[in-house]
Image (cartoon, rainbow, N blue to C red; front, side, top):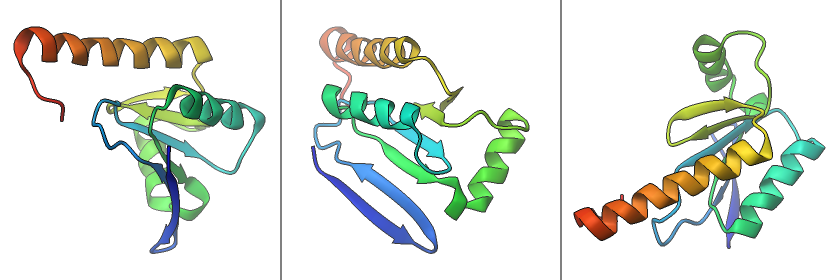
Length: 117
């Protein structure tokens, strides 16, 4: 799995490749690194799930948007999986949610001939 770091318009992001289109959309919002975040990123790499990391210290607009959406204070890290927000979810919640998303996508492809997005 390849990853790239970029600093665009003062925003720090890290993205991993999703070439096969099978992975759900995962965005991690945080302010710096902690042990929990290292473990989540390690899990994503191990399972070969791609993700985007957004450091809220460099994106105050996104931080304000998240506070508007989820309330204050934010419990970081926040994971957005296919547009649904999870504040510091348990590992079992993350893996269960992502496994379910992949399963649904395979069912759609197999039985309904739907292409991956």
